[in-house]
Image (cartoon, rainbow, N blue to C red; front, side):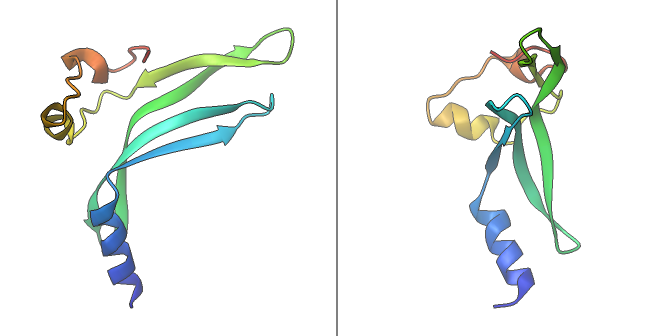
Length: 99
């Protein structure tokens, strides 16, 4: 199987990627939610929907911040609705704190 076929399989099989990371304070957090939009020039294309934006570090060394929308509306929004997840229209609004 060629690398192009592998990439095509990945791009067609995966819709959303949730990335977790261990931050310097030792806690694991969701740092981004992205969706795969396709394949262009043999490269899998992603667009971020939500990102963790670090605001600072408290006195105990714990990182704090907001999980924010990027302003990009998911192309799978209709798919979510069909499967019973009716997201409010403003959930993808730029700089809105995600809850």
